[in-house]
Length: 283
Ligand code: SAM
Image (spheres, helix red, strand yellow):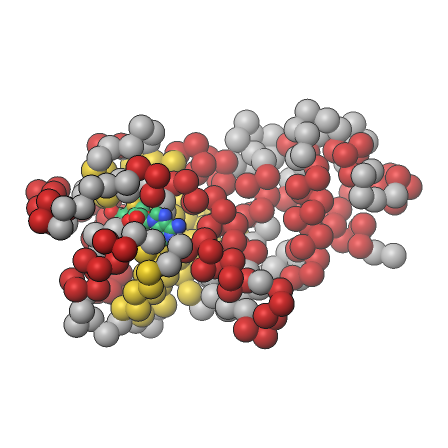
């Protein structure tokens, strides 16, 4: 979709873009192509797109995939997309807040009805204000998608793709890399969007680990441990964890894994947090 076309659709529908909904639309055809290519789409694939906007990425996804579920919060854009793609049987379009929708699907009380996204891929140019919670929600789903291809602010992309000891390493890295391995990323200058956002963007690709590092119940404990360990970044991790775990158990777990009692969470790898979870859960 060319920028002139985008402007014309917005003008004819008298749609004024809303900053709080992260409405920076991608008009660069090469970048749209690169995002779709990062999805390695097969004709049988089921793709979830969050925030389709005016649908330029949706169009590429519909050309290549078997099924597309697109979730748009803005009613004006939803109405436009409904008409624009009216004859396309591959598309399911939802007018929802995607984060609320995913949370609703993940709630414990409806265990049997929990969504299973395990044979889905996410390919999306995400609304930046909710990009991180959306990715975490998907990663924490019992059946998490096989691949996440997401465009977001470059700072957030760096946090997700980093390794222990890096400046950007932290809670978000650990929550996503438990289930996913970083596959690659590319930068997208602000000028590729209309209107251009204040920051540059990047498209990241995460691929689900072939064998989960922890089962679903263990993963919940891992999340608690990681959150507590990063609750005060400059404090020693063992001291923080004493709020939840007996000191002797912590001391022997740290010794077994080879983490110093003085270590800060930012130096501890995903694999070490996994080991720590297993040690602390072992009776
Ligand atoms: N995919 C389009 C593109 O590449 O041009 C638009 C991307 S734009 C960065 C983000 C889109 O997400 C907007 O269409 C916005 O209305 C929508 N959006 C914002 N918050 C949302 C939410 N919580 N759930 C679903 N869609 C949302």
